Length: 489
Image (cartoon, rainbow, N blue to C red):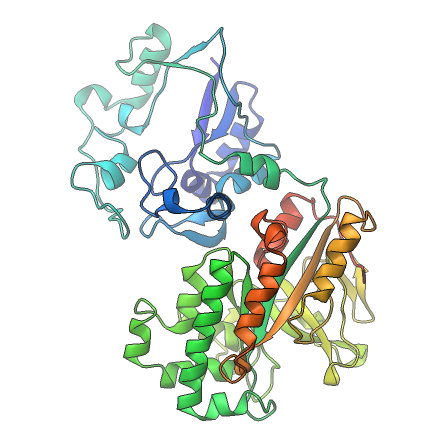
């Protein structure tokens, strides 16, 4: 008998990690139609607007839904995680988009609808945790709550299922009209997640903090607790501007800044960031818009694994991003060894694996790579050549590593796009560097960041510009089927 099975993002994660053979069978079975549906704590589930989405603009609603439907879901906080998930993950794993329709018309379809509480419990788990009388109206939710045990007539699920199929006598038989009740906002999925044929440009802000011994602008921040505190405040201000305007920021940190954070950040300062240290807060307060990556010159005894380890101790999970490396001259390159997992120098018990590299530089930044696109670098002397046999990805840092927040490079790409001069059906990348250590000393910098975003607000609002480095790679794999692009447009 044919069956429609709809999975939430949490169930997709569980099936993928524990029952992949079953998931593959569901994808390929000729009697199974595998679909997707949403449940609390998604804030756009019916009558469950704990996030205040009804008060958002349509652009903010669109961006919020996009973030949820491309990331995993934390069932306790209700926030998206940094892992892939949502409708996008199911479509990627299945290799096709879950079916949907805008409305229903006769003849209608009769079906037997079953939930977990038809076999396994008196009430569904999601209603027990999120909707039952007395349940919390907002995060954090208690996912340890359990429904009452099943009644005697449900103690043998297979027999119960056989009875339903054979006799049609289930007490919860319902009529299902074929209609799009999946999620308010799936217009977004059609437009964005399935837009592989459309040429698009993705841009993110990137910032570095550097060692005091080698970087004059960062030296006072790293050596003076007062300047460090002022810079911390400025970082939060910049983050608020970027999130409010729905742009994106990859905050990339060296080891020294993280050690100062551990030593100097006060309890009063953490109170202003929900009790979290700065990098933990940055990595969680605007999912899909701001993330924290490792950055290292791999000097003074600290390598990338060491920085990733310190970040992990500060509750920032490793995301595999290398935020800066040497690409030229080839004899001095530092990236090919990143193809294999490696141990920390200061923390040798910790092993880290790089998955994507960004920021191909050179001594004195005289011969940096300034390509746009994503590819798999071939060799030390052929960095800007794609090799499908490689797994380490490079995200192009067009137009280079200069810190001018003026927008001309992005404007140039958009002009070329609208004039039809870019390669059709390809994904372009660009990054704008923010000098983090100057955020508190250059009072024009944060306003210039805001003006930059305002200049391209129409494109940002459509989701055509803003994407973190992690999101760029996800879209490249899912929407563009990992088609490489290496260009200096």
